[in-house]
Every structure is written in C-alpha cells, then in structure tokens.
Amino acid sequence: MSKELPDIGNLVRHRGPMLLIDRLIEASEIHAVGEVLISEASSFFKPGRGVPAYVGLEYMAQTVATFDGARRVATGEAPAIGFLLGTRRYAATRGYFLAGELLSIRAEMIFNEGGMASFDCTVSVGDEPRASATLNVYRPENGEFASTGNIA
Image 1: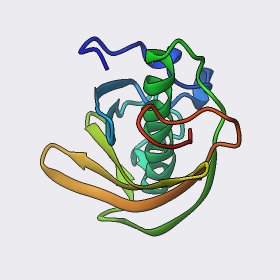
Image 2: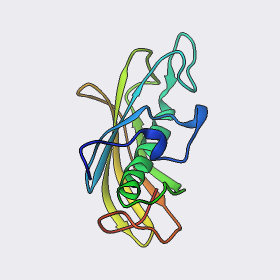
Image 3: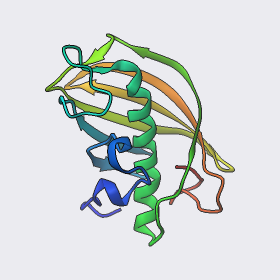
Image 4: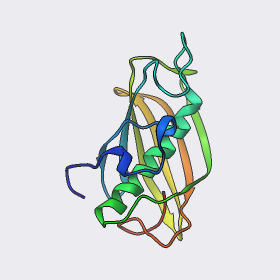
C-alpha cells in the first residue's frame, strides 16, 4: 500500500454522524490504525462527561473497516459492507472518552478465513490503553483482503 493514505470517506461506507473515525493514520497487510479527536461535536458526546466508552467498540469496528477499505481501494475496488458478528472481552479503563482526547485505535488481524476474520483491537490515549477487545467480523462478498482473506 502506498504511504499516502486515502481520505476516510473513501475507505468506509459510513456517512454523516455515523462516520466516527476521523482518519486512517497507518495501514499494513495485517493492521490499521485510526484516529478520533473527542469533542463536543463528536457523535454520542454527553455534555460534562464525554463519549461513552462503549462507543469504543464502534471505533474499533470502523478501524477494521478502514483496513479492508484501504486494501480494496489499493486494487481499484470500492469499500464493501461488512458485519460485526461479535466481540470478546471488551474492557474499558473508565466510563467515558473525554473532550480533547486524541484516540488512537489499532486493529491487528489475528485470523482470516472464508470471509470471517478476527482482530485484536485497542483504543489508546497516547501510550495509555483505554479499551480493548477482540472483534469477529464477516464480509459476505467475493472480495478478499489484499493478502489472504475477506472482510470489512
């Protein structure tokens, strides 16, 4: 993949207030890293509190989608729709992501076969992990991850 990463709107099918990831900052054959700056304008923001930590699950899922979108865009394909099948061990260190925090969301592929894949994901602020989970995902179309499998 080229060092110049595409705009987030070209990598995922989400639009408007449901596009929660601000940008893709890193991608390889096995991982992607997205960023989100938490502000009062962030979707799901609760004044005086921030964005509930459970939204981190969707930040992770959309980072997985950017992983697949980047692979597809690199081969001239459009982003595909995928499905979050489930998660294991979602854990957050606190109840909210705070205004002004720059979140880094890392999704690392650990399994990929026949349209199903699994990713270890973390949401961090600086070097401090704030949430983690394993996501299981599925992309039902014929497309494949650039290296070995399927997904979005």
